[in-house]
Length: 252
Length: 295
Image (cartoon, rainbow over all chains, first blue to last red; front, top):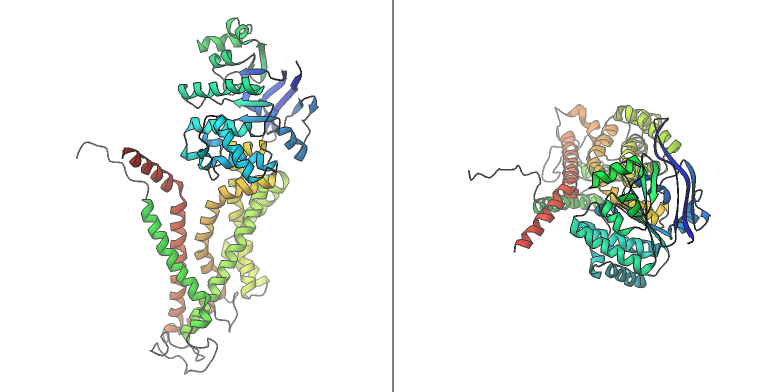
């Protein structure tokens, strides 16, 4: 399997008031193959979301390298970095918060296409197709975020992430803010995408059952470090490290 | 008592606000019309010294005449024009300059931000009008210099608001999503940050119109603003203050004009704030939604 994403020794230390503060991500290394679905679990505050933001370069790593398709993007800025974003997209935790309250859903979904210079007429069609693919009626393109429900917003967020046809989709607790039935629907949508589009997923979640059914491989993170790695069944049914045992025990 | 808990209504019904907004917009519109066409609607030449001096108000001169025999009503209208137009220019300058600096500080961060915010602190640490007087005196008076002096002391407020808005918005998921969608920094500022921070900035600007008009008239009153013979409400009051007891109309007329203009702009600003307050609109729209569902 080709290595698609290669994270080597990535560290992020937040500095507060001039003092070396909190190390949220501590020398994390892992690789992801093309088309792989990788789960990332761990308690709140263990650095999962920080790691996601580091991979998308929304925040700068303190040390380490991040490579996409063998190319180091750690030092990229400006246009080369924006080009790298064409391969990585993200779905955020808060459904409402991930759309600009003053812009329509259609604008948000089509923003990436607009930046690629797609003409308006074609863009409108593409946005409608994307919304439909994610199980939303195309007329939702004209609605504002506060006019649709959280589940619908999350579907629109997935449509936006798919718009520029990325190879890797990072789901940062994409289902945590939704109730169980809507969560189920979103998972079905993601399953379909996984089957049809040969997407890689980095699936950040603290629901072990979802990870077990959805992922090929799982990483367990604790206090900024990866403490365990393996197939979901191996990690969840026979955990090796103390922390994973505790996590599994807590979920049961 | 029916046993239900009564909850204090925290929101003002949107329809009420809309009606109030229309009313004050209408008043402000009338004022702006009067100001724009002041030269056309004033009955006499405001600078012609052709009447007997210090005539009390009469049918021919509804606001009397001043000590040089000029028609007061004409001078008040033209003075209002000077005051309102220079105030609007001033507010426009400080809003634009403050917002640009604030957004850039919030966006760039680092040294630029730290330096500009300390400059803001210095400006905000002085008592505003005293600082403005010092600058205006340094620039040797004149209406244009008074506007510059007030602009120098007032932009930091807008920079602060714009900066805090920018910082808050930069950390939202939708700005992150826009960045992932390939937006450049400029695109993020123009598409997401400015539209979302326009509300508070606009409200501050509206509320500032009244204040700035007062301060500009204040500087003129002290002789640091418009110079005679320019008709400007502040210096008209200043010129008439020795005659307050004997010929009160020379000072009461301009005073009422300032009062009316300031009250209109302040109430308009208040209403715009209520109108844009999400607590007054979102809940109302969701309440409407519920009503519709019940039907």
